Length: 452
Image (cartoon, rainbow, N blue to C red; front, top):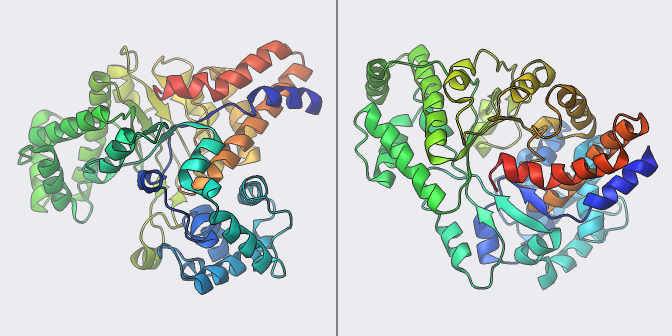
């Protein structure tokens, strides 16, 4: 099996990377400034790394979280804390990614430890001073064909515009429409967000129809700047419809601060249905990755903000939750819906059967806590027998850590080739079929699922 897997991997190892869902700041590539220090490049922005350090007793402040580029003494100390606690990463994909970054990108050839920390730091700092390690050079070296960012609906996308107009830039970086905050009418500060949306769209948002019109206008703006998908993450994916009068009533009460929690949740569920309608009309792929309790630890959120490692998964349900949406739009021409989950139980029970019937539905790749070797193998086993390979999305790296992109995609390619090799060894596939599938999982599937 290993020999077969190595042959299959040889067909995909050097293929370009399509990254349809991630969180790299486009200004990184626009400005193309040298990376400031090893710690703020490889540790501070990567919540996969900092949360495990935090669990082991390293405070987020000691990892440089939320502090941007660090002065040399502090950056070196942050790096030492990682190396001193290297054992915390044993058996995790985080160790695999970090080792791949260190060895394959920067040429580090020794294991991080308290004793080796300063030597590795000095080696990395020397590399980062080399123009070959600036963001654009690494983008080309990584073989990234397309990179999608994640953007607020009110973002003017000036970085994307400037990057696209730069004669010295030939890469493809596209925005992604992410309206989550604007759909959660029960959250603190929502009326101010609505006002901001109306101003960005130049639309009167006094009533619900105006609010919907503002969202539609901003989606069109994103499409004009290259967007191909809209990304959504809420506590659930229920899509129960409201009557126009009821939606308008709740919307007005939410703006006034008098709507109850059950009502604002009902409005958000109705708005997800509206998002699907918009995707049918404007062509943006709709991606859903629900069931996460954001900012689980309030003191950490108050000190360091969101996306700092304390988002925790919830149970998910898709079959009944999405039925109103799929009854209306599941067979609509041009509509595409990519379903991600952090609840593995739904892969075989719900997502694969949905993707195995509805031509609009794709089973999203293992994401976040699940983009790990054993979880990726379980995903292939859970989904393939019901939906096949063609109804899966292709890998998404979902990362803020720029240098981890190639490591994550490479891991996925190796694991898929291992799974395919097993099917070949069991005479469930011929090797030429497996090679064709391996290539399609890297190239055809993400292009098709995300309209890239």
